[in-house]
Length: 93
Image 1 (cartoon, rainbow, N blue to C red):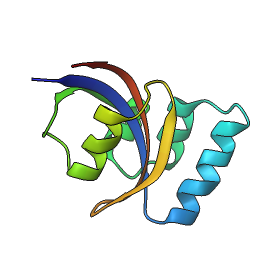
Image 2: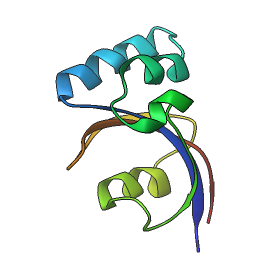
Image 3: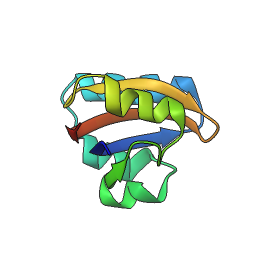
């Protein structure tokens, strides 16, 4: 079963996500921005979701984590929870 480790920033609107993505592009620290802006409890840990299996997350989230390049911030990705900026730290297929 494939596993991965990822971190994310969850916000309510696409506009918020785009603004934060712009801050990341300017070199701001992902973990600090997650602590400041993320609506997910993982924000307190810099957005760290730890290791999880394929299928543990909603499909849109899994598609990013298990298909797109690692160590790159992807998004905004819309789910029923809001808009995510997602960075896969590592993946074991």
